Image 1 (cartoon, rainbow, N blue to C red):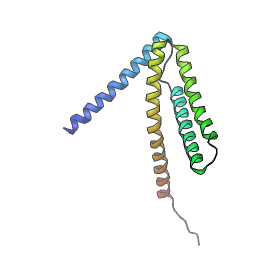
Image 2 (cartoon, rainbow, N blue to C red; image 1 turned 90 degrees about the vertical axis):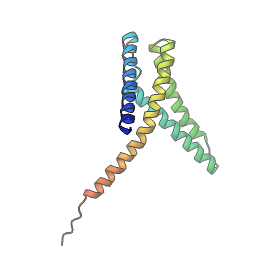
Image 3 (spheres, rainbow, N blue to C red; image 1 turned 30 degrees about the horizontal axis):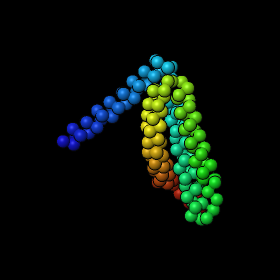
Image 4 (tube, rainbow, N blue to C red; image 1 turned 180 degrees about the horizontal axis):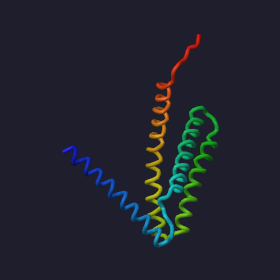
Length: 141
């Protein structure tokens, strides 16, 4: 039964990737524009990072009785990046594709960036630990 569950999940993931690819190809043929690109992923990841950093800064300032304006400004920069991405999407497509593609793009890339951040941290920690295990100490008399 476990093999069937794993096979079902693999088929579901392959189907989702295929549908996303077909949507991207369709938009490329119709508008000469792709929603799912590396550039838009980095823009979304940057906006998400700015939002979380600004929120952390604002919360920290609230707890210490400091000025929350810095955190709000950083969060605003994240919103500006997303608004720029939305404007760019609508500029190159029509309203229906702009809304659908933007919702798909932001939701998919936000989830990937959030999960990818923790995978990156885990990779860095494992790399550091592997580096510690391979060091050799030489004592010269």
